[in-house]
Picture 1 (tube, rainbow, N blue to C red):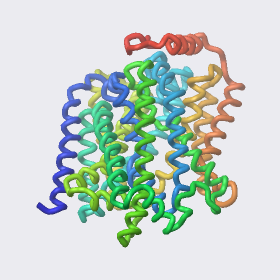
Picture 2 (picture 1 turned 180 degrees about the horizontal axis):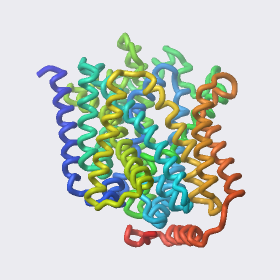
Picture 3 (picture 1 turned 90 degrees about the horizontal axis):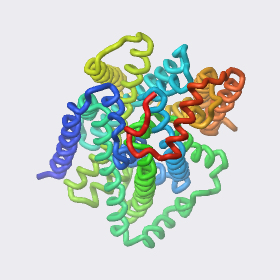
Picture 4 (picture 1 turned 180 degrees about the vertical axis):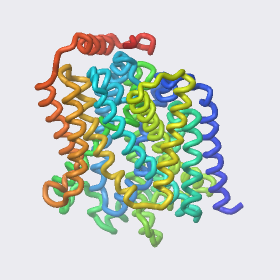
Length: 503
């Protein structure tokens, strides 16, 4: 049996497992709440690994190791910023969002929470938020499909479009049928695969190069600066921009929706510990993979054309072809977990925040679930059409889409949860201004404009939201009662979904 045959066998097993999970959850969705949010019954380990897997995508296994391989530990500042941001997100946003979204009319999407929390009768806030999610995530899903096609092309010599259709088809099938639960539980499996691969590759690799000491000595022979996080060319703007990536977590709908789906607020603490533990070890494994890769390539005289393939190259060299196939599958898992999560959030925005909110149509639970599935299919087809011809501009959009979501939604989420004085007008103004700032700032180069656009966008949103809210806020007994009820439940620590009243 050839090496490639073993690789393909591993991928077939992986694809079959993902489709099996999706099929299992097909009959578990009896309402839109269950299809889009899993009935708020997600165990902490599943929520934690699902959030991590849907967050990291191929960046963790290819982008980060490749950047560190090429430039050194100076690129690790982004990982530091993301880890801190993820921890703060789990600590301050997760428990309160879990409770408040259910207290406030059982909101199952972020846009519907904004509307219910702020009593926005105009529906403009919900519609604007839904449009932002739908547009950006359609491009995000498309970029994931492009990544899947490129991966199949580079790893198996497969035609780009054939590879893209296979990866997209499997992902769409289990997302379409099983909804949020299928996406979350496949994310759990995929997150576990990513974690194991990122531990195994550098661990075996460090022995192959003669141990940690020999690895460090070889890296110093290549360039001592590779082991420094602060070098001669590292400016304050570079470090601040890298750390600012952490701000994005507060506004990523596909991540914070996992907080809303937790079984109880009490379980947010254990989910945080699992999620951050997973993230620290996985990011550490990615960094170690790059460093070990530098040493291995140097010692063995390997010509590495693309630094982002160092994880794949080490996997193929150091392991049996079947294990190497599962390591390849871990990269696909990173790509597919992000696509599935974004598909479900996009579909929820289309059905819950645009179709139902704008058209005000009433439907049965079964009809709403079918609408959700139809939305997943429509978004998939649009994203697939965009990805049909490989287009770097789609991939380039992902670079500032993180900033766009973080700046548009981050401050709004924080203020909604922690400040009684936020108004609908303030939230809408800040959200739109934050998104516009990211778009403008990200297209100007030089001087202060080299600062990552999420930081100015976040600040503009925050400042304008506070100023406009101060001018327009009107006290509401209903809003105050919901805020106080959320604080009461947070203090008492309800242990089950049943303990949390629905608005």
